[in-house]
Image (tube, rainbow, N blue to C red; front, side, top):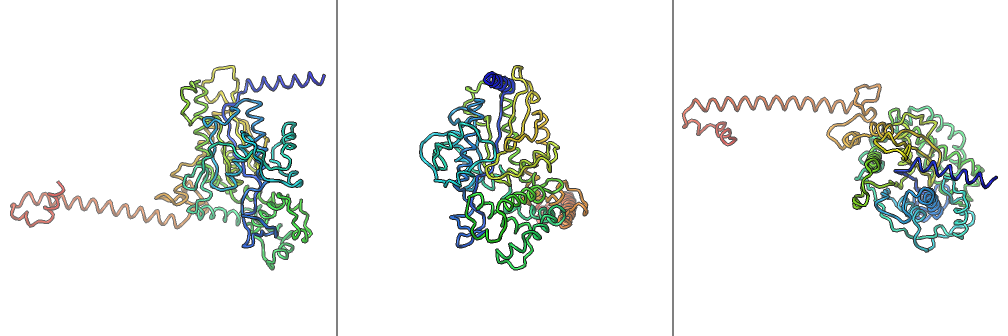
Length: 499
């Protein structure tokens, strides 16, 4: 009876996959576990643990992404046969930010996705092995067997040959999060969020009431009142050490519960990305940080759907790299959060209820599938898009609706440049629609600049008109005087040269 049930379930799963064929896949994952961002000259972090270098991926982070890549291989290559067994550059386009931790995460991920060699990776301790897991469910026989085969090594394979495109700040393909030219404009909104959003104000106050006295004594900071940015530095250090299974000998002397602190710090990051970094009412920062990447996503998605609808011969277009089956992004909690909030906002969903903070090796995935693969496809309406975060479904919408709503929210390059101060005109930092309302935060300085530019334009136009009249009068005067006089008339000489 049990065997028959299993066969029935497998048959049902196969029939569903045949009727709902996967056409395009987008994954945006955060890098794996890493060292803290802030360490002192002795390579010690705020919780008094030593590291080799700030922000670098650890062995646990490598293992996390190897297993995530292996899980994706099982799901999208073995079970659905969506991608080829070996890496095909026509099938997958891979972007990574230009930081070591994202590049090494992409490499580790690809080694699980497309294993090739037999070189061993970094050695993990027994306690580290117990926590070196991604956030998605990897509890299956094949992965458990692979964990046994690893025998304490972070990775079984050291190299997978696949091109990873680096995104530098000037490309603006992933985001403009690290562009120094845009920091002032973005920080102005974040500062306003800190000062006006009650949830953030209350969270900071409660943090100081609960941890302030203890942490001031531990950190030697006197009676400092911790701000959101101070909490960020502390939680970054604590989570890095806790995830890496450090002893935390000095921190334990505070008497604070490690698991409770871990959960509290993750709650802090969820709150800050939801309300601080992307919490402004109009979601300006999510637009600024995600519009370029969303443009890339829409381009590749529509190219793939167009090819599927027209049933073009792929062999005849083998050199066309613009229609991949998959777009893969190796990013950060900032880039993943921006994408998640951007998409939820574009689709009109409740961000507060739906948003999930991306812990290490978390994955945002979009699957574009056919509605009924037995029928001829004629438009985007014949497809639908499912959004997942760590295997939890966020939304399921028709592809035509998804594309229309997302493209409507994408900021143009000109609008991004204006906001960041790259363009000739400045959009208000708080109100990008350009509406002039002090209550909505319109920058008075920008209004003064705009008024000055208008007056200057009027002055230049009037000057041009007067100059044209002068030249016309001079020309008519030259026609009524003898040539001898014309020789000494500078206006006539200028006019003659113009001809």
